Length: 109
Length: 117
Image (cartoon, chains in turn cyan, green):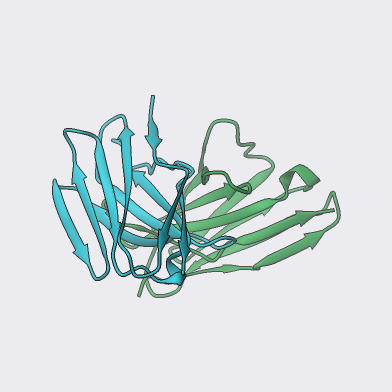
């Protein structure tokens, strides 16, 4: 089957760094997306990885290891507005995104 | 770029009413659009994949006669919830690819919160 494993909830302090891990199993693989979803809102696209390694985009970076079925999202210089759910969504062989429940990130002052 | 507009944002209506939700790609053409449903604190659930000029592909367990999808142009897809009941109350979100390749991200509309009384 296809599944995604992310921590349900994480807490971090404003200004700090946090890493959200994701392990996945899919039927085939065509890359992995990270989305941010604030409560009551639709997801917004953050990053895409299809090759192994680190992709950096401002305060956010995403890493992928295809052989390990593992990805992480790294958030630096945390701000209160970063409080949201972060969704790891791998794409299977049919180009379908597989969605988990995501990780709820709580930022404290 | 890559703006997806979804309308309406909120709908409150009586049981038995049919509700139409529109999803538009404003600055790009979307051959494929996706319709999702999300219940509180749960993951996104893909309902159907909407292809311009052809019938939508529904996920297992989604009633195609209840959730009518029309993708009449490259910039517009509609979802009609027919004879809605309280159990259909949910957050409905559409998304679209910016390109024809599967490696493009899906960009989401703002979602429609549907409440059936």
